[in-house]
Image (cartoon, rainbow, N blue to C red):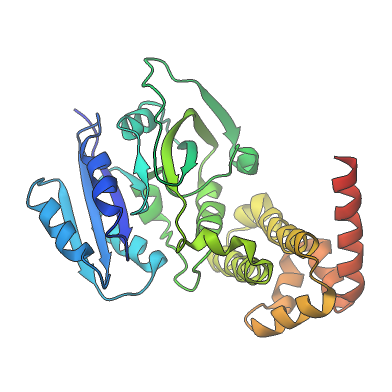
Length: 321
């Protein structure tokens, strides 16, 4: 008997794409699905479209709520999930018909399973379904090495693990929420299995969150918020093992990306300092305690010397590459 998989789809202003998304889900070769459509107070026709689909397939559950954002919509979906496993899908994306089957087939106890993805604009060219699919395995400390990155969509998560450890998306984040989520979740698994096939198709749209990634100042602010969120979630869990094994590394990753954005966007120290002032919740005194030498130096020198040293090292690093 197939184990139930809950597929959570947050929906907001996606009426042009939602039919394609839901259609790709109900066509899955893996049939034991609970498809949770979370209508995040979408002002377009999404509500009617979702209800129409639910009337055709009893595996579909529609939740209508006020608009509270992507992270909260996923959290609402988690609360209603009945499956042993949870998969997140974005409303404007499409999945291969064997996505869920491939993820479930390759799962192991204490592991996370994900797959390769492909970005597209209007047309999807799916890879032919293969009888045998290659996989790559990473330790939980090396998920940053996964080609293309590790995102929450198109990934198989344990519902029990999520609920036992009260893992939820930070509702204060509108970008990089998946970075924080995976940083916390991966502390509880031993390895990450990546199905080496493009089974998830990520649609590039003008209004998508990632369209703002070219705005370097917005990205820096996002990494500052992510760093603060990781700090809060890890420290709140009060687990020495979690802090020792991954916390400092995750803070360094956020810090490194902040300065990578500065270098790529030619953001000077004064601009960076103003961005930090804009986000008053960045708690340097607390990060200094847990974040290691990098954050200590950043605090001691008020960021000025640290900024120039970091940019210099990144410049040398890129030239060596």
